[in-house]
Amino acid sequence: MSRWEKLKRNPRTAWVTSILLAVLLAVLPFLADSFLGRSWVRILDFVLLYIMLALGLNIVVGFAGLLDLGYVAFFAVGAYLYALLASPHFGIHLPFWVLLPLGAGVSCIFGVLIGAPTLRLRGDYLAIVTLGFGEIIRIFLNNLDAPVNITNGPQGVNNIYPVSFGRFSLYQTHQLFGTNFSSVYNYYYLFLALTVLVIFICMRLQDSRIGRAWAAVREDEMAAKAMGINTRNIKLLAFAMGASFGGVSGGLFSAFQGFISPESFTLIESVMILCMVVLGGMGNIAGVVLGVVLLVVLPEALRYIGPAEQALLGRIVVDPADLRMLIFGLALISIMLFRPAGLLPSKIRKREFEAEDEVKAQGGAPA
Amino acid sequence: MTLLEARGVSKHFGGLLALDEVTLSVQSGEIYGLIGPNGAGKTTLFNLLTGLYSPDIGAFFFNGEKLIESKPHLVAERGIARTFQNIRLFGNMSALENVMVGRHVRTHAGVLGAVLRDPRTRAEEASVRSRALELLQYVGISEQADDLASHLSYGDQRRLEISRALATEPKLLALDEPAAGMNATETAELKDLLETIRDDGVTILLIEHDVKLVMDLCDRVAVLDYGKKIAEGAPQQVQHDPAVIEAYLGGV
Image 1 (cartoon, each protein chain N blue to C red):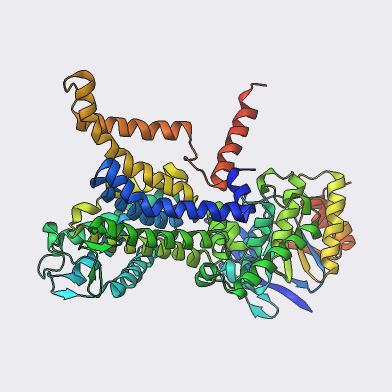
Image 2 (spheres, each protein chain N blue to C red):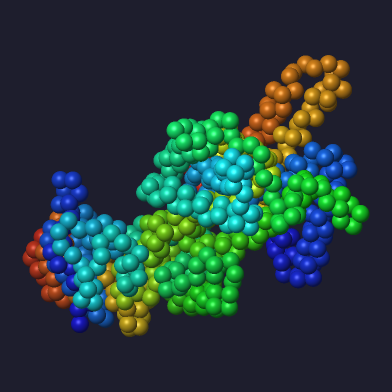
């Protein structure tokens, strides 16, 4: 069948491919640095961060079929938790290995708290309620500076301590094998390791008793109930797992940026993450990864449009900032037009769209 | 031995009295038919039994214990599985995956097991898969194991739904019009399958409009009309009951 399935059947080819892929990922920041510039290593870091985030949302939307428009709330919870417990704001500095599981755990609890009241809702209604919850969290963060200053309000939290393992701080440049590893490189390898872990967890979950139960709820909730699936728990589990991935990425975002404010967690962020999931191929892990790469890299790549316009036409005709967003929007629309199930659709989504086409083909010809 | 007992079950939908103090009992090992005109409350009774709705008055007793209301998954765990009048398969999953979902209630792997894939989880997965294949074979659609549920023929979808229900290891199998839309050959095959299932120790509660099938297959029959039970007994007995002829079977 597909090249990928052939690959899986041949263990030797699979090993060689994995090793090549690992080497490529290991040297990728060096390639980006030398060919495109240091800023692109930073963009790679963001790609990895968003992969973790989008894969969390993919559990909720892609696996369990629950449309969540307030997902960024968990990203915010993780980010603020890290920021408040590792910055001069409260004068607390908990170590990274405490903060990482703590962020996952606290976001997980928030996932259950927000998930619980929405359990009876489906589709559009669920989307609207989650959207509301997402906004509530952001507005809370914005206003929790009085009467007791917890979040520092719209000014956000500053000077967040970078990730460090004992005395080894990722913020500093380290020398290894005669090569300088600066901050963006260090974070790249940390994010890469965690991303691989997240992908691994997602793959295992999808192909398991839990994954099947999620798919069953997605397909037909009533039938799933009648088959003995406790749909309440299984939906809450999806919310909790998704939220904990969001929380972990939030903590990493805090440490990486060093500064956060409620502005980073607006509705448009939720929408962008959802776009990454849908555009790449809902429910398919490789698809989601591709969606993230595209949606993070494309807007950055389109920054070259100003110089390109200048070179091509000799003067600036359209404001490059406008043109950039215009092309970005057009690209999204054309992808959804030409590949409605996403760039790399999951097995299930692909079947769904094929089935629809069949119905159209059969019903299309007038009798 | 009485396996299932409905005691004075009533259910309103707004002003409509869908079930009016229905009392019936299903014996272990029999095929019990539930017939009546459309809208008589047969499917409502199924939905109440399987916990999708809860009764206004009355209760169900299974194996002598009261069934907890509005908890479908607990009903399934206790050993009642059902099929639906308008087939409700997981359309975009394969036939095999559908039956594997049915094993959910008898298996235990959680998130940790799924991620770590310890020997116990792997053994459980393997047993889920092999049991699901067995069940597909049992109902006679093992060749379609990898086909999409929604791509199966109508008769095969009915069979798949039965095998998915059997995967939950039920003591009582509740079938809602399993022969609807089937031709004579398919109905005859279905009759054989249901007899095999009964002989293998599963009690069957059957809603069906195919009177011939009901009369041939069922040990006992109850007739519902406008939410009331108007007759109960052996098929021959019920067939000649004037109230039943009036309400459902019609004159000859």
